[in-house]
Image (cartoon, rainbow, N blue to C red; front, top):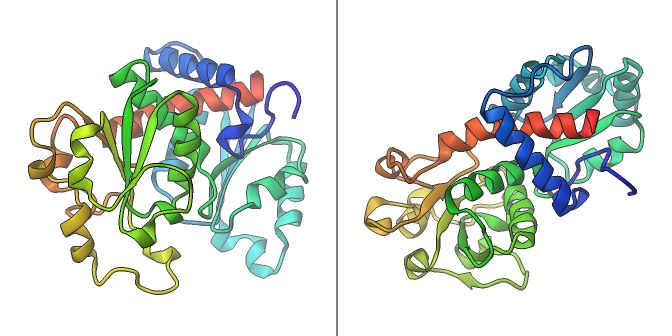
Length: 294
């Protein structure tokens, strides 16, 4: 792909310079700057999987930039009548949008749709493949608290093998020099060449940040843990675990309370879950402006 990335399918679509530009724009938006640069633009969101944060975040971001937003209700769309994804994309493209934000339960769908439209496609999460804007907002949040990430260490904890969030974060954070440790039960860890641990308590003292992930039971063909409570005994982030350590806690949401993170830690100022949501709007504003307006 030459020049600026017209689509955002994975974090690989952005150079380091472009990521820096997006973060700088997000910072300006967080300070109330920016105006309405996307007036007369149209953004379409189409989510084939349930979403609260990502869909709302994109729609709020687009409206703050002055764009019109249309959400396609998949439950009432022609895909339920047998229309192919390609025809759906072609019909949406014919309406003249500037960007389409798509989420799908199958990996690779945003990339396929990008071949059939003239507007920008933004991946709002596809299967267990990628979630680039989540990684961008996580990077932005980490840098806000830790500064330069080179040499810093983060433990990603949980169902990493089935996590598009983990995939995107591993790629992006490593490009910025962060050391990534994967933590979870053996059957939750992917076969990639990164440090791994089966014990969260053995790495918590070595890291600057912990990113907890939801146990994605809907992606398991059969139960991989006796119960979520069994999982929580080993991998829930509790006040007892983190003590008074100087670190921050992230989670892409939705959080399984007292399974992923305890109630007490969610209320701890070191937990940045709601800050991630707030930053997500600014980062997605920057992504939309970067792709549409350059």
